Image 1: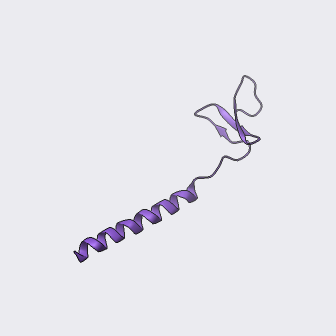
Image 2: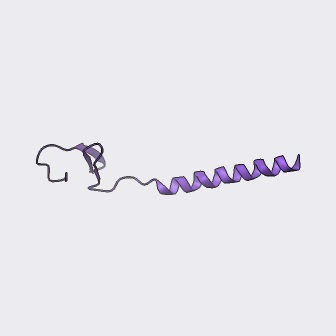
Image 3: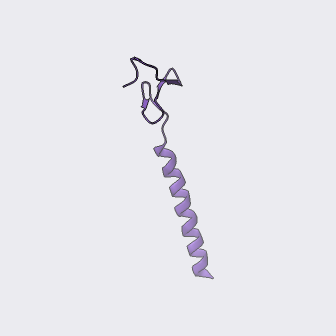
Length: 58
């Protein structure tokens, strides 16, 4: 019984640490960020689609 309590406590702590560390990795896009997979860029707090000869798209 004591072993099961230790395993569940350890699993809970591991899950808590994983959730806290995962939150640190996610950051909002910065100005001028180009999303190559979706052909769009971040400008003025919104996504904008790339068009032909757009200066922001590479």
